[in-house]
Amino acid sequence: MIPIDSSLKKPLYEQIYDYIRLHIADGKISYLEKLPSTRFLARHLQVSRSTVELAYAQLLSEGYLESKPGCGYFANDMTGLYLERQKRHTAVFPKEPKAFRIDFSPEENEYAHFPYNVWRKLSKEVLFENDPTLFSAGPAAGEWELRAAICDYLYHARGANVFAEQIVVGAGNEYLLMLLTQILGSGKRVAMENPTYLKAYQTFLNMDYKVCLANMDKDGICIDEVEWADPDLVYTMPSHQFPTGIVMPVKRRMELLKWAAQKRSRYIIEDDHDSEFRYKGKPVPSLQSYDRKGAVIYLGTFSKSISPAIRVSYMALPKRLLGAYQEKCGFYASTVPKEQQRVLTAFLRQGYFERYLNKMRGVYKGKHDAFLAMLKKERWVKKISGDYAGMHLLVEINLKKHASEIVEEMKRAGVRVYALEEYMAREAINKKGVENTLLLGYGGLSEKEMAEGIRHLREM
Image (spheres, rainbow, N blue to C red):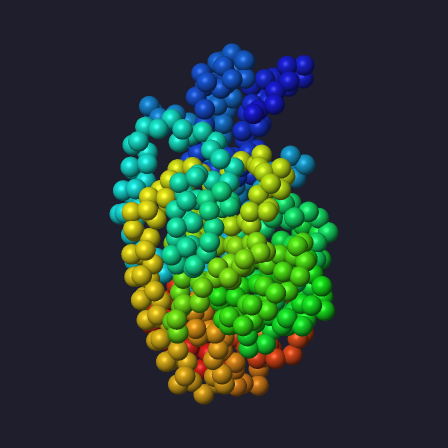
């Protein structure tokens, strides 16, 4: 979009020349970027072709452009040129985040075993169906076939009793929580475990919800603190609390359901975090599977079990909220591409997901066991917790330095570790008992990388 004004005294070719020259110098037209042909640009700007040719000729002579016979005109690298400040509009590009040689992130997955060929095959099959509805908008809550497949999975794997009409598919849990706040209405109070999943915490604050923090004991969120806060909602991760790793026993789950049943307006948001990967004891059914009053709102995702890149999460609403969803949010377009939904449906229905999940349970258990064995040999390790499920461990350190100091020193060594206090809500950041605890993820690391990272920690 080159702005030219025929009323100016400056010739049209010079206006075109100045615009392109400044944008090449600023880097807005990047090195080796192809420019439009003189014929196309003349037609687009509604000027004569000779006007554009004159501008290009001047740019060529000054070295801003180079011409490749049969290919066209391309920008040269001129970003180091001095230009008058009043004419220069420097583009500001954000710096890439520093890459670490070893990153003990709890968010990283292992992708070496992902069935790329299967996913590619299913993608081709979806595209080769020649179904014109593939490119239509589709249902707001997601493709019916995918929602039905999710229901079957939840029933067999998590004991959940839900139907396809209760499922809402969306691009990430945060998006679904934003939908939920609109369904439930404004001004609600929500109790959250502390420490907690900060993305959910921040989402509630952004939606003008009042967040009440509740402490945890060995069984999870403290019911007496919930009762004292008297919230409308409780957000909890009973299967594997993030980041503590606590698995809520059945007795505490029953107490939480009893609290919710006392008022019809109360709900429990169950974020079934990392429920697929458990390494000790029998699998614990979801909280939703015990719910008989329609008080549990279930959140799940394929971010850990498949990949965060596919951006598919899902929410199972109680039947009594379906009317409110249709009224307040039923007009929103689905945020997950229909093609992606159909590929995922085939991945679930044809048994590939179950086989991949079983394989990855073995892979992550092997990583978990190896990492745990390494840490138990270290003198600086005082206590290890959270080793029941998921892809990270909490490590209480036996050092004079605080965890936050170690985080900074490790960064300088090219190793990223995390302090538990990074996952505390800001009003509880100074809570005692967390300053000497590290959070170390192992899901995306090899045993060699784990060993090297531990060596750096040993040398602190």
